[in-house]
Length: 207
Image 1 (cartoon, rainbow, N blue to C red):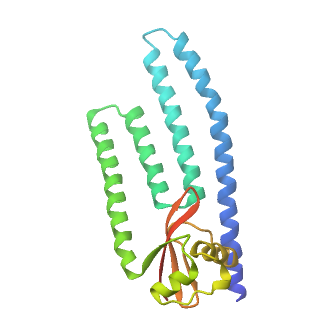
Image 2 (cartoon, rainbow, N blue to C red; image 1 turned 90 degrees about the horizontal axis):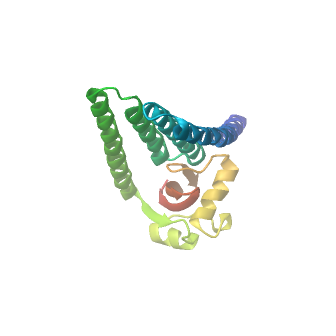
Image 3 (cartoon, helix red, strand yellow; image 1 turned 120 degrees about the vertical axis):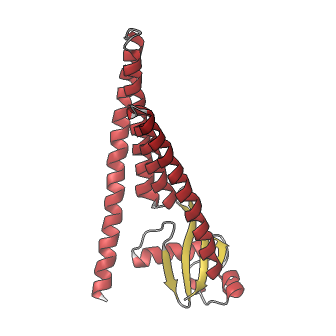
């Protein structure tokens, strides 16, 4: 029991550390946006022959800030999609700014295509996994879910399935993210879709 409590505290601490890192990255992004104004001034005052190099550095700085924004989203939401977005923008920055040959460009295109392929087939696998239970909206009342699938989720944990997940997250010190699973009574609840940090759909199955 003490070991589980200690693990829960460690997990909660890592969650807060990720939030702190996300805050630092956000602050760095805001500071970095000041340099964009400086780059615009350089583009305006640079002669025609050197404008290309200055503008290329400007685009590289913009895309680096975009990668930073996506990294913050990944740290906060813990979703598969956010991880792939970070990889996608990082590849795009590398391809558009640092590609010196056609081979580099083609490798970048192939890498982007691979990211889209992974995203497509990954989401298909998640859809197949949903067949082991039933997907409900987070706003579904507990009584309705219990009746539909034959489980026994305690009604005193919340009014809706989403409320139950929020309660279990607090009691187990486990953050909420897509793919997170919680066990209560005879049911296993898995978060399958989130939008801007809010639970939209959950998969309820028998434990």
